[in-house]
Structure formats: structure tokens, C-alpha cells
Length: 87
Image 1 (cartoon, one colour):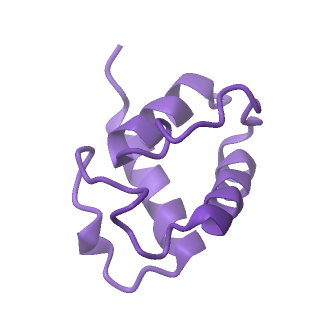
Image 2 (tube, rainbow, N blue to C red):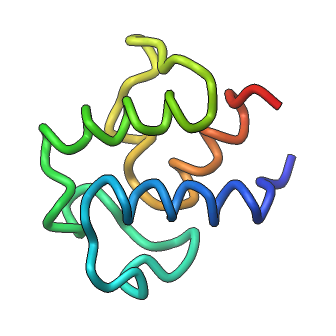
Image 3 (spheres, helix red, strand yellow):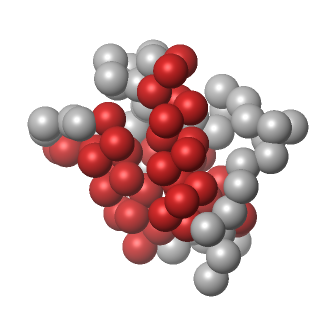
């Protein structure tokens, strides 16, 4: 199943707004690495971002799913949201 392009754009918007990223061009596409690459995305920011995603997309991230793999790239994060969001 291919991730919806709108999901990628929506997740990018949440990421930019939540982390206060001044240059959204740093998050170019699905292959952009996140955790460890985006300085604003530290361990505390991951929790804040997760809450923002839950609010925006209407689902709750299960503790068993909460892993570094979800936040590895824009694509992995958007794919997770796409699979779990309420339509």
C-alpha cells in the first residue's frame, strides 16, 4: 500500500509547526532522515511531536509501536500515520 502524498505533506506541516523549523526545505521528501538529523527533534521533542500527530490525525500511538523506527525518516513517520489515522 502506497502512502498518500497528502499524508506526507500533512505530517511535514505538523513537524515544521511543532518543532518550529524555520527552513521547511530541510525536510525535502520521504527519504529525509529525522531523528539524529533534525537538531530540533530531540527525545523531548519526539514526545511533543507524537502528541501533535495524535491530535491532528485522530489516533493514539500505542506504547508498543513507539519506536525509533517510526521517526527514522519522513516516509516512515508518514507511513505510520497513514496506516493509523482516522479517515
